[in-house]
Amino acid sequence: MDKAEEMLQAKTWAVVGATDNQSKFGYKIFKFMVDRGFDVYPVNPGINEVYGKICYESLSALPVKVDAVDVVVAPRIGERIMKDCSELGIRNVWLQPGADAASVVQVAKELNLTVVTDCIMVRGRV
Figure 1 (tube, helix red, strand yellow):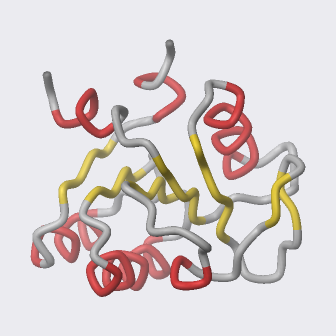
Figure 2 (tube, helix red, strand yellow):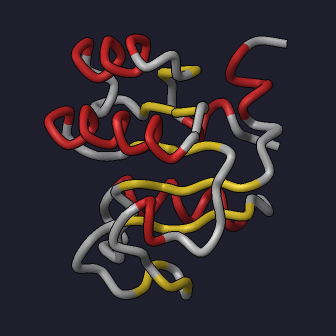
C-alpha cells in the first residue's frame, strides 16, 4: 500500500481552502469527499458554509482533531498550513495540484509530516 492509499484510510479530514463557489476545486474536492463518506470539515476564513456543513476559520477552530488535511490553497498560504498541522499534531497532509509547490513540500518534510501530492478526486475513487 502506498502513502496515498494509506492516507485514504484516515477517518477524519479537513479541507483547507474549501469554498462555497461551486466552480472552484475547493468546492468540488469537499463535495467529492462528503459524497464518498469521508468525515470531513471545511476550513476557510470568511466562508460560513460549504455543501451544507459549517465552515471553520482555521484548523485550530475545528471541533475535533482530524487525521489528515487536504490542502487546496496557494503555496504562500500552504506553507503556513503545514506549520499549523505540525503544531496541532496532524501528521498527514494531502497537497492538491497547485498547492503542491516545492516550497510547501519542503516545509512539510522539514516538519516530518507525511505528504501526498496528487488529486484526491483521482486517487480517492471508490
